[in-house]
Image 1 (cartoon, one colour):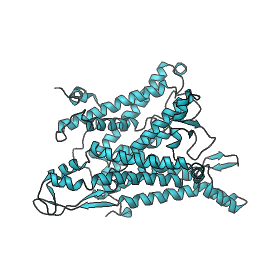
Image 2 (cartoon, helix red, strand yellow):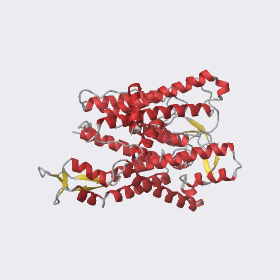
Image 3 (cartoon, one colour):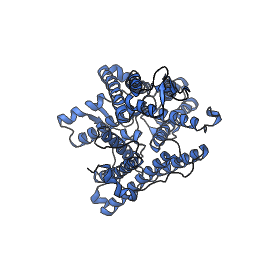
Image 4 (cartoon, rainbow, N blue to C red):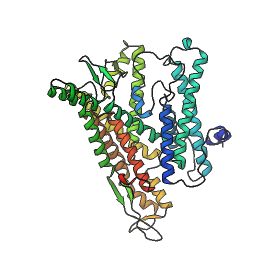
Length: 477
């Protein structure tokens, strides 16, 4: 019987591919390749799409951009969306046993990666066509068929570049993956911009700088009433303020602190009896729960906005969510805000006053975040081959045994059953709780964004330490 993966083999030669390095790259070379990949991605994020006629109004994809590392109006409009979508769908198909694959077979792994790449290219093309046909770049009748095809071509080229950069890093030229690098950079860029943006915005009280730090010095130096000016700089509700910035750094420190929590499983090599303890981290599934939860909510926001724009008086559409576009908002310009319906209740409160005004909203939001993060985390361990049975099998293949026990995979699996499901659920809830804390404190970049950035940066630090390529001022040797 022909497997689904076998159907991919004839087209493998047609897919763009980065060859594996013939020799092992040094830590310095890998740092250089990583920085070069990031530079190329950032350049693409600044190249405008040729031929577009964007419409005025809110950005329906605003809520998705933080996890997609995309930039509106540029050739990197799709960001890493096709890669992430293809990866998640392939993992789900494999976890559901729809795709049969032998993990130990090099041929099967090559076919799986090829299928994922082909899937990513197809999704890139479909999303590019959907963007053009939806009128985001202007009515197709106005811009013309040729220009519409040219826009699709530009987005396709950017999607291929993004895919190859991700593959370049994952094949050993650089550190980590392109997905992690691009998301972390996008979020850190947002935080730095909100802190130091020199743009002035008319808020009804005169022109104010968008950046929290610049606004602080503006009030300190030029305000006639220094006390009132500093109070505005620390607590202004409509634009980033100093308290938001301090909250951001506080959340960074708390997440880094919890990253070190782990339970050590006492293992040793069966032959040499040499100790080889393995950690089960509190954040066992890393940031995957919050990525999945954010993807779910972002798609809900998008669908709700599109439906509300077209059918604002429909009762069922109103139950899904009603939207308003304020003149300015702490979430950013061009971002519509849900004011009722399901979309409103799964969105974070914007301030403590919002918490006091609508405690039911706060309670629903907390329960929703904690529950979905815990469920996604427990589900992901089975899909990503991190379940007790999979980990026990991996350790058994590495000839690792529990100290004081004979080598049996069943005993090792039974021991891991005590830790891994609990770590997955509790870790997912902790990530959700940290996200809620960041949102309530008003941290810049949203709680989700900060969680993603910190976990990605921490993973890079660990990889650099393992490669002994960490600079000395960051704790390297």
